[in-house]
Image (cartoon, rainbow, N blue to C red):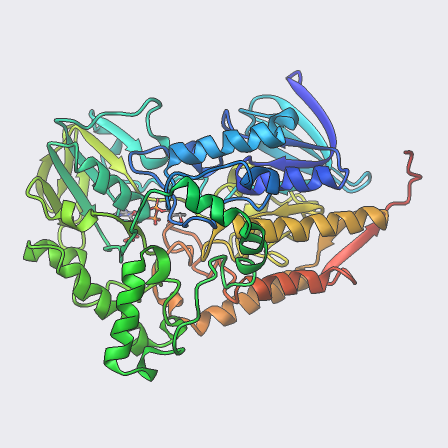
Length: 545
Ligand code: NA7
């Protein structure tokens, strides 16, 4: 095929979400020649794909934004938790001020990449016929690119509308007067159920594991209050967020464990956090919840008391907020909701417990569940993603030993610092596996990673390095450290996507770095001076400037 477009750059960035945009901004400032390939028609990352009704971010103002002064000084948010339309508008604003598009090709999905060790360069192809060569390949492809669709019997027989949450029809789709079924109960399903239950004639929500959803406490933001924040934003985004566990600088709890307080005092604390909304009751809760079953249960029991009181229907109450926890509190990602429980309590909403009545099959008319036929006009699959590694599995990333990245990872992910992988020299990953990816605020985490990567690439340029290749020993040590930390936590017990346990056949292993952002950045920066864990191949050819 004749190349549609050929670019030859220092750094090719793949993916135009928060990570890709921040990388373009940083790399340009350091004088690198760059280009960006983005699979969709626009910037926005997850907010280009997730346009289902009610889609909004669970990270709260002011932390879910880039710490780029020319962007934050000129942007005003509307809501504490912005929705997808506002986030798309934010990315348009980012582009207006940074002109990322000047160096971007849209509708360019990478499907093959090979590295030539002789010349120290990647050649990257897209499905659409673009070709790029680059010295450094920076993958900012996020953790929720590849959808997960379980292989139900009869899936292709269904004649109604079948939609995965991240492929919502362009221009929207009305559920007015329709019968709708939603499979799943992750953060996506919670948002869809909450929204479509206000439109649909009948709504069936099919739940295998109930979500421990926390009150969002959404509110409008005024121009005045935001303007008063502007003078502090640099400190909040660059210092406070980055020195916290995952990008949310919550106040310290009154003690590490709730049992160190009287029942009265801890309930006062719980109530404050619960009423404050967002992840205050989750991430901002006692750290002991991650390690100790009794402490974890105390927190769950408070949540269950509050949540059950919001529903009248005793059966729905037992499915959605069971007295026995479905998993340890925070071991699966909590969602944020506004009136989810009240909506589920309505008569036109049916809540199906898939543990009692599993999905037998899809039918032409709808679903067969526990032997009962449920006819519906629309079925929404809110069944999640092949998180962390899914995007890489579609890009044909060939290693220097001829093995693909996913082939190499079939028995377990191997990265050095959650940044790069052996046999894939000069290839860098942002918001991927074995990094502090999913336990905090996305923009903070990607900025820390991109800053580290840019410093590495700069140093490599200064030292005339042809390529840096992580050693298998360093990658093994990083994987061992993540596994050892994970074993001390209660996160290990849940069948979560943190553990790769949502995808049949995927190795069960902790895919998140758990020691927090500060320790993560320190580990990365400690490796830079002596290139710890890397094979360093120097350039021998004479450089022409
Ligand atoms: P999630 O959080 O992975 O949720 C997927 C949901 O789909 C979850 O409730 C699953 O139940 C359910 N699921 C998956 N497969 C099945 C089958 N076979 N049968 C029944 N139910 C099933 O995806 P989201 O889109 O909600 O969230 C994505 C997150 O990624 C989001 O929070 C962002 O932070 C990043 P299970 O819990 O496994 O029983």
